[in-house]
Structures are given as structure tokens and as C-alpha cells.
Image 1 (cartoon, one colour):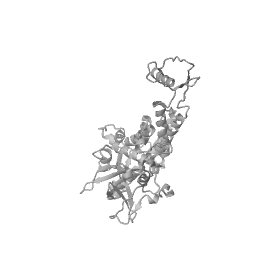
Image 2: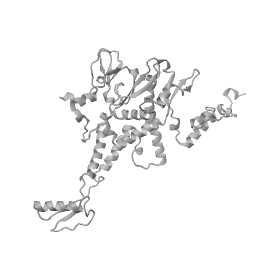
Image 3: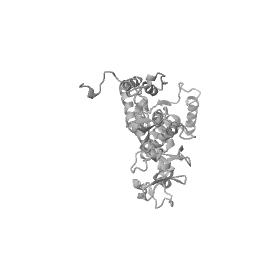
Image 4: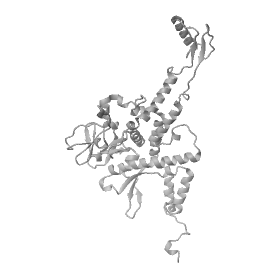
Amino acid sequence: IAGLFITPAPSERANHVTDTEERTKTLTPQQEMSMWWGQSFNYSSSGATVTPQTILSIPAFWRAIQIKSGVLCSMPVEVFSENAGGGTTTDKKHPIAKLLNFRPSSMYTPYTFIETMVLHLDTHGNFYAIIRRKAISQEIESLDIVPNPDEVETKLTTRNEPRYVINGITYKPENILHIKGISWDGILGEDTKTVHKENFGLALSIRQYLSKFFGNGAHLSGVLESPTKLVQDVYDRLVKSWKVRYGKGGSEEGGTAILENGITYKPISLSPADSGTSDQRRGSIADIALITGVPRFMLEESDPTFNNGETLTKQFVNYTILPLCERITDEINYKLFPVQEQGVKMAKFNLSKLLSADTEQRAKRLDTLAKWGMITPNEGRAMEDINPSTDPEADKLHFPVNMLPADLVGA
């Protein structure tokens, strides 16, 4: 019995099979625990049921997904080609750029694709999309999202080659785009909803408590006290008349009660603040901020100073968005490009506008790049989504006239 409570070792999560053609059905750890314990495995110590749907109902988590996916979707994915003499050139007509920025699938837009990816990563720890290719040309036709990552079975062959089993169909790794989160073995990302079950459960329990507190009588406004013991008939009449006249929706709700026979009304109050739920709620928001990597001030009402807010936003970009971009593009570069283009062409998120979101900072950056001959005027206009100039000089690099090469300084 005790063995049922032992978490499977990381190496056991991707089961070895003796042959790639003859496979035995295996279950993921999440499926195994659900089979033994049913829905009780989803219960946290606070009593709340933790599932992807209940987690998404937490306002702070919902907002965190919107923020992260919104930032990622604001940055187009560009394909770069390495030049023979060094440097890179943007290949705007590459099929991968069109696929990721225009229509990953006929069923959804690039925004929906990225948003679902972020949601799956922050709830399941894994995101899967089936790579559909044309039969003859092998050009990628679509990226079809796997709706429930928990239903994907991952196996290893005797050659340590992963295989993905989805709805009874086995796929080789080159046909599955697999973005994973933090992982013990590098094969499967850790299930976020399981690892942070108690944190999510606490946030859900606080919300449920507050709902009951205000919604169905958990909050008593006062009590009626009698100096003598009331017989049952008198007690029933008193309760009924009080509810009819002064209860919620009563004929004299909010009015002044006139009591007889020594009966007195004693008001009591216990606000959520008195019970400590306000502090606990703020603590839950802080937990969501730590789990998702979104700054806390973006998830709740706060009034940070300008400098503090700007610093926190930069930290969000540097420590949350940039690593997430690398995690995504690493898999894209390996799975979506044909073998002959791997290492020669690569996909990257265009971070220029994100890293210089302030108008003044963007202007200074463009001025510096143009002044030192790093971009042409038309390239600078393109970076700001301005139509190119028809002046031929706008396509030429310009350099300061008071600068000389180092070997001419002595002369």
C-alpha cells in the first residue's frame, strides 16, 4: 500500500519498449494516479479540486496567461539566413515565417496558437502540436494542437528514441512539436498543476470561502437574545416574522426593529479582512506571480512608482519572456526546418519593439543605428512600420564624415 504513494522516478516516466513496431500501452504518471484514486488525486489539502479548468478560473492566473501570450504574440517570428561573410539576412518569404505569423492551421490564428501553448505550459508543463506535411514536397501544411497534453503517451525505444502515442497513433519526434517546461529527465516537462497543486488549491479555497461568506448565509449580521427559554411555537413564529420583515428582501429590510418580551438584537460582524482572507488572497496572487513569472503588480491593484514599474517590466522581459522565446525557438529550429536548412536558417522572435517599448528610447536607438551606418533610412522606417522613402539615398548607409579608419590616423 505504501508503494502507491511513491512518486515515479524521472527515468520511469518515459517507458522503454523493446521494439518500435510492437508496443505495449503505457500510462503517464498523471493517468496512473487518476486510475488508482480517481478525482481524489486532484484534491488539494485545502479541499479544492485542482484541474486545468479550475486553475484557469483563478483571476490572477487567467490574467497571467493573457499577459504572457499577448507579449509573445506582439513579436513576429522571423526567419534568418546566415551569410557567407558573416551576419544574417531576414527571409520574410520563407514558408516557416508564413506558417507561424499567418496561419499555423486552418482552425486557429497565430495568436490562438501561442496563447494555447502558454496555457498548456503553465498548467500541464508540456505543449504538443502534430506537424502535418504534404505527401510529396514534405512542406509543412499545418500545426495541429493536441487539446489535452495528459493524453499523450511518451515512450523510448531501445535506441533511446522518443515516440509519441496520441489517440492510438504513434508519431516519431520529427512529427511532433513538443515544447516542454522544467524537466527532470529532459523528455517530459513536470506537470505544473500537480507540482503546484497546493498553491492553486489555496487560491481556489479562498475564493470559495469568500463566495460562501457573502452568498449563502455564512456571514451573520446579528443574533436575537431572549432572557427566557422560548417554547418551540414562539421560536418558530419569531424566526419566521423576523425573516419576513427584516431579513434579506423583507418588507422592512434595513428598518428599525421593535422587540417585545425582553428580546434584544445583538449585532455581530466578521469581515473577510478580520478573518485574514485578504492577506491570504494577496499571498495567493504572489504565488501565481512566482509560478507564471508575471510581476505581481500586473496581476492586482497596485500603485508602483514609475521607476519601480519600469524596472519590474524590464525584469519580466529579461527573465520571463526572453527565456520562453528561446525555449520555443529551440524546438522550432530543430523540428520545422528541413535537415539541409538546420543551422543555416533559424527562427527568432523579433524583440526590437519589446526591448525599446518607449517612444523616446526607440527614437534614440534608431538615431544611433543610422548615425553609425548600421541601418539605412528605409530600414529604420521599416522598423517603425513607416512606408519607405522613394529617395534613392534612403537605401544607402551613411557614416560620420569626421571618422577615419585606424590605419589612417597616423597619416
